[in-house]
Length: 231
Image (cartoon, rainbow, N blue to C red; front, side, top):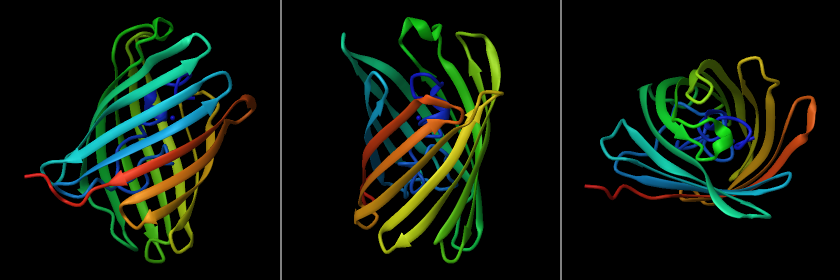
């Protein structure tokens, strides 16, 4: 989100379907998909030794509740298998506005079908807070949360800190660090570009764990957003 070596919370889940700081960031923002609209975030991620294919559709049916359901397939030499499943809800207490701040709450359930994951469905919740400057040209996001690892039967603190900076027109720079418990943090740097403003976005990232060069990864993503169409 690392999406196989970390629980989904620190990957997509911070991941997940949100309106603007979604792909390519893992750190979530205090925004949701527009009312009565949907989005699909998809990407290919290449850590060492395997390739991951992700898809996270999300819709906002009621106006202030974004629902995300999706997962990942992982390809190794031995074949392709389902490696992640996720269901999440997200709401806002204060929507983020330009030159202001926003606050929300997200909670969900995640599952890694692999036997090495320990079994069970992990539960998580986190609070995304966002702060905007210079008419949204610079936005800072923070996440603090909780993760219940059912397989290990333990609770863990989760966190994220990220920023998005408008470089020029439709192109943005993303930088973040995030992690859980006492584990060494992960860092990620990426670019986002709107092919069609607010409708079609592409992105690319590079990431690694601090002090662990063997855990680096690359990703390429595509994000599609619809206008309002739901009844």
